[in-house]
Amino acid sequence: MSNKPWHLNRRTFLRSTAGVSLSLPFLECMGAGEIAKNGPKRMCAVYFPYGASLPKNDSPDANWSWMPNGEGRDFTFNNSLKSLEPFQNDLTVFKGLSHPNGRKMGGHDTADIWLTGAQFKGGNFRNSTSIDQLAAQHFGETTRYSSLTMSTDGGVGEPTRSSTLSFGRNGQPVPAHNRPRLIFDRFFGINADSMKSQRQELKTSGSMLDLLLDHSKSVRKNLGHQDQQKFDEYLESVRSIEKRVDRSQRWLDIPKPEVDASKLHLDSDESTPAEYIRTMYDLIFLAFQTDSTRVATYQLGNMNGATSVAGQFPQLLGFGNKIHSLAHGWNKTGGAEKLGKWDQYLAEQLAHFLTRLKETPEADGSMLDSTIVLYGSSNSNTHNNNDYPLLLAGGSKLGLNHGQFLKFSKDTPLTNLHVTMLNRLGVPTEGFVDSTGELAEIVA
Image 1 (cartoon, rainbow, N blue to C red):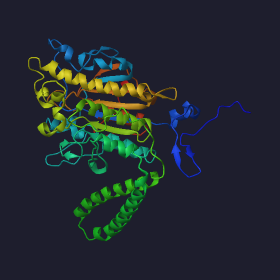
Image 2 (image 1 turned 30 degrees about the horizontal axis):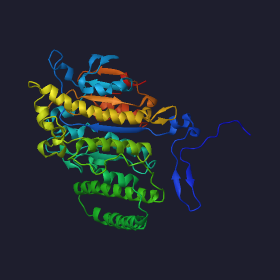
Image 3 (image 1 turned 135 degrees about the horizontal axis):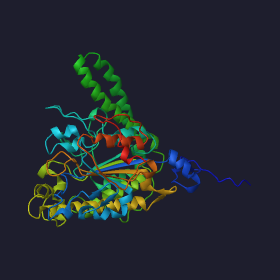
């Protein structure tokens, strides 16, 4: 018998005599080499609105600054990010990065471009493709779902007051999911009685789309040039639906993974923010752990002022006021601490997510080593579109060099970080919007 270690390919399926197949999790016999080369590279982006507490260094409330003390590898966290100390060598905090195009926009308008860097001119609110969707397109059919798009408010919102961070081809917003139980059922729900109806629904949808696309050929040729452009954008949306239907049909006979939902608060909503935020993070973790998707975005709240359902979260959690009011009062007496405590709470929820990733073994490291997590906002403080509070965690196996607090001038666009992330994810990118290169400081 050979002493050569038995090797198993990642995409091996368990097959029963009944024809049922189930994809395997990562096993040691698959080898670290294959996982490093062909294993999952994941991306998650989490956004919070209205910036953070940023008192000056000589202020009595300086210890409530979101930004750390020090610089480079010699830095310490203030109260706001104290819970992230166990991950100090797994993350980098940035000061000075922002979108030049965002500096020209209103203080409530920039969440839309956090992952795109696009320029909105006058009444032209057309966005461009976000980096998460570029990564999702690159990963293709590898997973059951190309991406998981979530937000507290759900849907797409309205231009410059978006309720989603994700934008597909032609800058079309990708609707965000906001109900934990519906997200869980979509990714992990198993209902044998519905399989037949799902199959029929997909078949019907496919037939209708075929007819629609066939009819579109005769319609298009009778349109003027400008109308043809608009019609082509519409058809692109139809084709994206066609691709989703086709994808669903191919995955229908592959069982969804079984996960333990006993500790999830699937019926939580905006009235129970503690359980809600934690559950949304846990759903991302489970989606990554089961390799159901490798791309996720989560918008904790949109920038639509008093109408965002997330606006009441700090008040419900005992922090005294709504998000927008806390953000407006950050520079008043005691205001830096009040907003800082909200920042602190959000950082604790992020720390919970990072802990789950880091404590889950994968190959010769952890899930965090192959997962890039971007966390931050598109305001520095209220309505200020410069110097975003940002940090990047994970991805050490993907070539990221962490354990730093880096300061940049405003001449360095945030899209340089986007380019760096995409290249580490294996999405070859020389330039993105207004980028000038990679951030060499974080490349190992």
